[in-house]
Length: 142
Image (cartoon, rainbow, N blue to C red; front, side):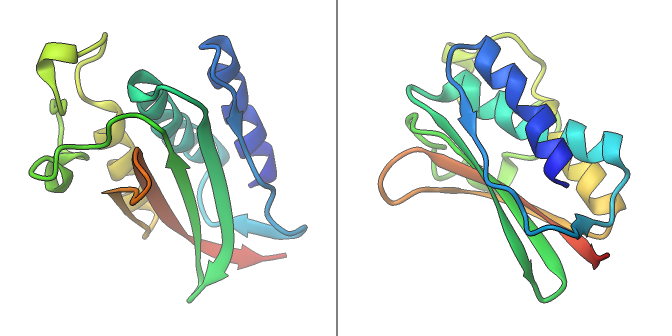
């Protein structure tokens, strides 16, 4: 798990907005193939970078109820409230007028990966501004 969070960090640096990350406790892993975890987290980071005005924060929380939670927070305008239920739908973008490159598939791909591994996902607007997209995955202790 720690490896994947570190692998997801370089794309953020290329955009000039580094993403921070916190490591999970030693020996804690998510029950998901490594390449799929990398894709899911990278998609969350990339989406945040497209809409953020400041740093993108990546955090991982030790398991609660057998689930690890990974979340990515940006400091942009957040999601329009009526869009939140559709943030992970295919071919959707919150604001087509500001749309950057992309087909609106990144979060949908993340959702499919997470569902296939028995996890969950969602998005919220942070009370202090910006958006938070999160995934939970079954954990395993080594």
